[in-house]
Length: 104
Image (cartoon, rainbow, N blue to C red; front, side, top):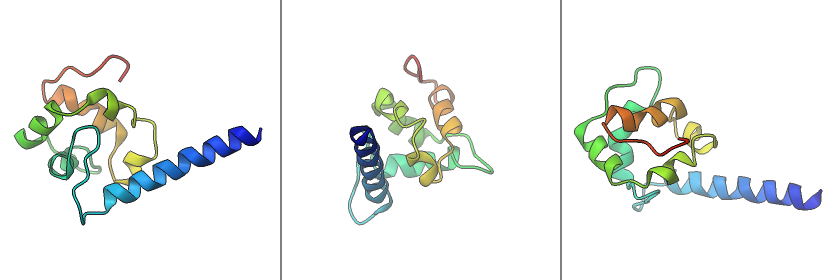
């Protein structure tokens, strides 16, 4: 039981560190082959309450991203912590005419 609790705490710590790294803008951060500029270009398309269509810059960044990696965050707390709606984020590849990975 202690291993399970320890594993969960470890996962939460990793997620917290990831959020801090993503929020910190003093240096460029790359996640799943998307950099700060790519995330910034796509954020208006994945943010409630008034999401917009993705820009060409967003779609270009998304086309070079590691989509299976990005999909791994769909049920995590990272996206909502960054103000990103996971449902909108998962629909973004289709809006950019990019085939999403299976099970994403």
